[in-house]
Image (tube, rainbow, N blue to C red):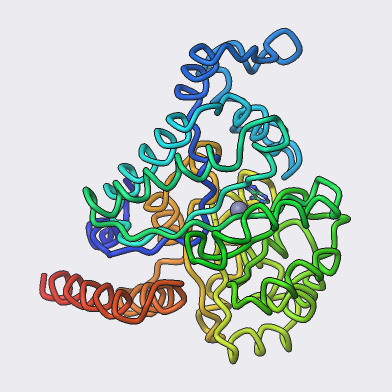
Length: 351
Ligand SMILES: Nc1ncnc2[nH]cnc12
Ligand SMILES: [Zn+2]
């Protein structure tokens, strides 16, 4: 809980989450439980961080870079084997998201990180889908699943990963494609072919760019991948002309403040160009990225932004509504959420 007088309002605001990796909600407790249940040997002799959930959580406070984090992230997800593991992981996230005021969640997952170690694609998707259905029925959270291609694997692997998911993408069982993992040295144009195919099939597209990588990668993602959204995009403010274009085209930037601090992309939340984006008409949402690794879920990220920037309720209204409008749900769902936002503002505005 943050110290801001706006905390109850921030908590109550109906939230859309657009940038959250389901595998990134694997808490050290669940990681150790699954490792034991599935008889996965954790590398405790090589890395003492794997001694206990507590030592692992402590190590997460000292990431030195995106790749340092990704090393732990991929070891962690190696404990996910059965459909029920994937379902439990996602369900635990949805319960937590509900308590933070999330009403619509568009969540990423990395199929290649599972199929590459022998877990069937269907096992992953079926588990996640079951949790999504439960979230819709029992928590009234609408959901979308977005598959990401991982950049640390050879780009040629992407075609196989796309082919595996193609029928789900075309039918809408998956809402779109994304691009994640190691950014530096992997310019977006390398994935141009698969993004072009996805576009020709009417499939939605986003990509992690401008997190550790330069603003040129954001420009490339827009020109070569024709992305509809930019994940992280914190380097956008380095190019005013591109920032104006992003504002005009209403491209949503999915920001993850606590992640950026933990991965040392910035020293503190106040360094992020959030005020610049707001004042320049750049639409953005605030998200948790990998909440089990970065010390906070979505509300913690809202609070961190409030503590750094001290926004007014009017400014939060603009941020929240841009986030609703940038969602990939249909217009009637957006209208419903926008009415809930208005009702929240009325309630707190009258206090
Ligand atoms: N912050 C991040 N950047 C790139 N790839 C990721 N995969 C999970 N979290 C990520
Ligand atoms: Zn991410």
